[in-house]
Image (cartoon, one colour):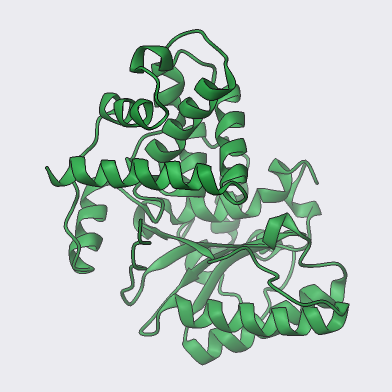
Length: 317
């Protein structure tokens, strides 16, 4: 199935993720982080983008980026090509450094910007690298918390201004917000979007941006319809999908259903855990495993593409 085009309009904000190919390390030493930041700073100025939040991890990066007239792809291609060339020369290596095309989720800033900022800043905590985001120096958290001066290429005023009218009130509200728990469904949406893996927003926002992008709003696909399609592709019955069996084939089919349902049909992981009578941690583990396998297993990718094609047919019917 052909990839959907990026959605672009002036003022759009994206959750951008750029990962090392096969999870390889993209930052080994401090000077590599600094070089990446230098390339980013030049790109932000050249293509007139605004960076609202960031977190650099050893093998991937997260950013909240806002565009103007020029599309996000201009910046991302520039960063990827320049940093890869420099990194390869530095380490005497060749080939791709980053994993395919960067991921960018268009975010409804009115509803999700603050959640996105928190999600980005808590990445090191979720990875069990630190217990307090203040202890991780490679993110914009310290700038929001008033613990460090923001670098010139980072903009915190607008994001921080959403928390309060004065600087002190905003920082206090931000720190309180950082201490709250994000529900599991929202975490999944921040990672994968709430629609087709590329948009995070309510139905009105999704309809508006798709229409603005010249796309029709697809009809909804029910969980039962999705299960039927996956069962057909995996040559099993829908009843087997909801059985207690833990056979590898059925486990894969259930995880594939959940993955496609979350990325392309606006469902949450809990919807599928309930439908298949499985617990959330188990379902989450299986879905993550499928995502990893898809980068290496051609037959699995073909199954997924076949399922997506049938879903598209259902929506057009």
